[in-house]
Image (tube, rainbow over all chains, first blue to last red; front, side, top):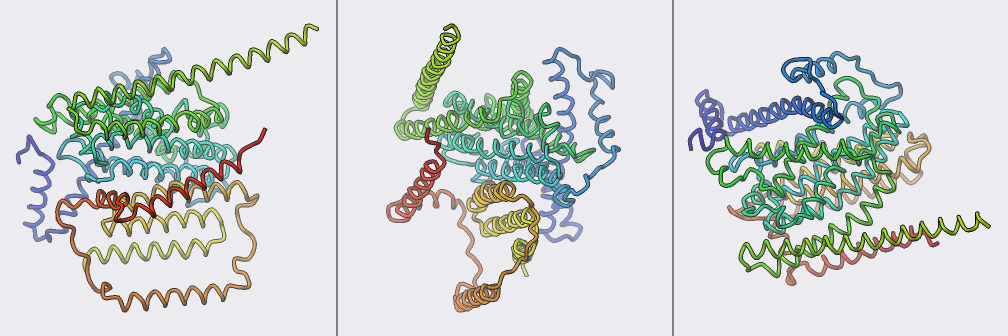
Length: 399
Length: 169
């Protein structure tokens, strides 16, 4: 073990050795080292989060044909720090009749639900919080806490808009969780494990090749889970002012905002981990963690950029359309895909990796084609019905 | 006392305290939120017992689905979320008696059980409780029948719910 191949273990061993040398018990020393590791990860994430504010503003500006922040520092890089100072010195307002404890707890839970996700993110083969054998399910469990934080924020604010926003958002979150769970089982079937590290290690061929439909469903469900446009029912600033976080000011609003950005970045990372090989890139990850961390972060950034791209180019979908889209299209599609994948996996278990990949890709194309054909028939029928009704109305108007 | 025992006692007090608050608080939403913290305490218990899968499922199902549904139901059905009426009804002594009886019965039963004073054996290295559970659930020698019956029951409930909610044109 040297610095180049496993720096974190080296640092932890050195620290534990130092503390034991000072007369601290072995167990406590290990505990302190683990605690410092967690603190370091969270601190780094918060720094990344600050820069994400800048990335988000810069990218949205480019999408809207503007320049974005460009006054403070090179390319406006100091802007997010100015934003933080502004958020910190703003007056902290709690609405009258708000439920104080719940009101203050909600932004903390919202941030927490994002940060705990990083416990299972493998930054490098040897660098991860815990290699849970249920990493995929852990993702859903953390989402459950996020859902709870939104409903707490909406209810405790004592504001109609906030409550309406929370209702809508939670309806979306609860329903889009189902295709998400179904599609998360597809990498699990391929890898034979729910652990994030095992899923990455098994991706000699990226799973996006084996299951392109799965990757697309995952990112759609992830965007809904994030509550970003086109699924931003909870905020819907043109209808609900700002939705569930309307009453929050200063850093409490900042927690929701920063949590949302980090959440989007994290889901970009999970997309990379589950479908694009995580920290693997042509064997570079075996050389050093110093190479695998940038690889994973780049993949997360690309995923995050795609989420932003969708957000800033699509309009908001109406809530009933969105729920119909989920229950009548995405959920059945995800389940059909899951069943087809499981069946093909059983059939091709002993085939060579290339045949396996080709079979999986072919089954995905067939499922995709069938679903498109059904959609085409349905929408043609629907259009004919609308046009007939229109014609009939015109006829009666003429006579 | 080992550190595991200290954590267990803290979590147990947290869980039981939250449980008491569920019935003690007059505000229905607060009761639901205390219920969430009780369920979370139970999830921590599972994690302490090395049952990671059950711990996560506890959070996903109970907090992510059932508790959220509770909160929704309370918010959508009550005009006033603060419950003004008395929290106890006439039969409170009966339920208190029943609770004491059940508790003492369980305590007496566990007291006589020889596993009570034993510490749990460590998992052998490489033991994957998750795949053991999965195999047990679909193995004909183990739990495939209850598992399938439960699935059919859930499916029946699902279809029943759709049938009741279905709007005949």
